[in-house]
Amino acid sequence: LCFHGLSSAVKLKLLLGTLHLPRRTVDETPAVRSALCPFYSFLHAVLRHSNKWMKGALMEIIQLASLDSDPWVLMVADILKSFPDTGSLNLELEEQNPNVQDILGELREKVGECEASAMLPLECQYLNKNALTTLAGPLTPPVKHFQLKRKPKSATLRAELLQKSTETAQQLKRSAGVPFHAKGRG
Image (cartoon, rainbow, N blue to C red; front, side, top):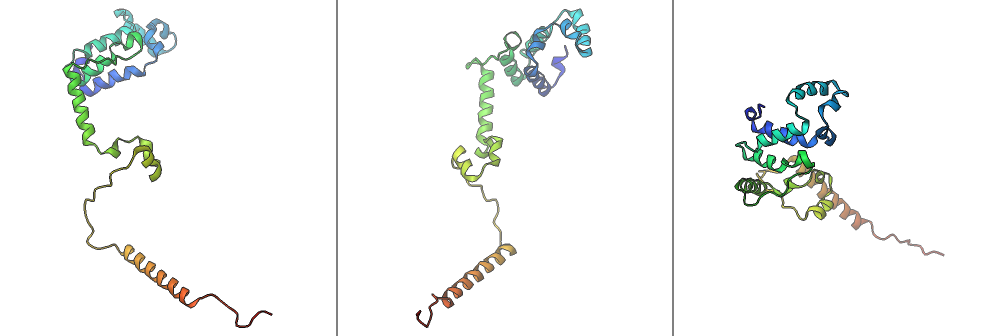
């Protein structure tokens, strides 16, 4: 295989792509699938000579990844080592493993650098302020990066309109008292 010639990003995508394979595809022999699809007949022709099934090919790829020099590829290979056989992930990573400790340290640094609001789920951008505060707690106010030297014209016009409307309302209150009839009812 030309696995070692690939870039680290491609290796990671290949390894993580194995999680999307249907279980029946991993377990079946190529001969079973070759009757269903021309692609699988081609795959069967290739794998027939090497006498490998899909599970064996995945095991070999994961084995090659576990010998890689990139720590992320090593970590993902360690997580996937039991996937072809059992269909489950190896989540019992060794805490004493220096590779795991280095990667966890990198992740902690990246999470520490991020703003708290950037770590919220994507659906939080559609919540109103009260629902967001209930879900995520009080958020830090945004940092002001610059200060305007003068107010925009719209803000000035708005302030003038508000002042005129309050003056008009006060004049109406003064002039319009409680109406009473000079003549009594009767």
